[in-house]
Image 1 (cartoon, rainbow, N blue to C red):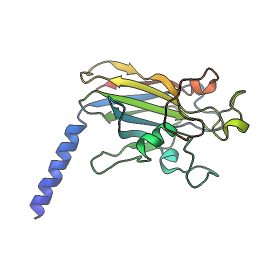
Image 2 (image 1 turned 90 degrees about the vertical axis):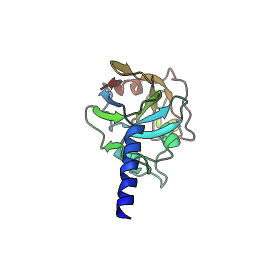
Image 3 (image 1 turned 45 degrees about the vertical axis):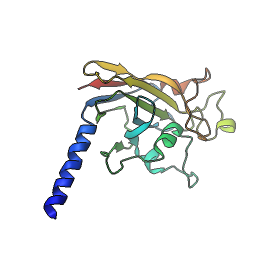
Image 4 (image 1 turned 60 degrees about the vertical axis):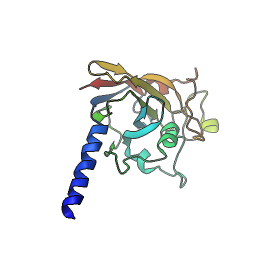
Length: 204
């Protein structure tokens, strides 16, 4: 019986390694507005080419654990609304997933490796800084958030094996966190555009 269990376990490890066989390096470069009144919270996740959520690759601890200061029990869904709705708050893993990287917000960006599989896919990243107000996004009309979360996206082809791809600013999350849609980038965004300098995926 023990041998059978061992064989099944080895088989699952092998299948998992086959599902996520292609490794890439993902780098998040801190922009000039990375650190303001508070550090940004962010997540990076993997989708299939049709936009279906596969798994989280990285998420800051506060967003993952919903460890917000003076927040309601449900946390702050408006902080990273696209990721929260896509992942259904599954920050780390399911039975067949490898652990996501998670940490306190790094002081100057982060670089980490991730397995993304051999098929065509999409890598998304969402960033948000609390109290990021400007003349259009005030405490009165945007609560703790200030400016909405910003979302970067890159489509990765199945034959991606060399070079680097930059994620492109593709939209924002809902200002109140009520849904997981990605909205067009409003012209009123200011400092939110400068949270990150660049988000890149490099083939290993």
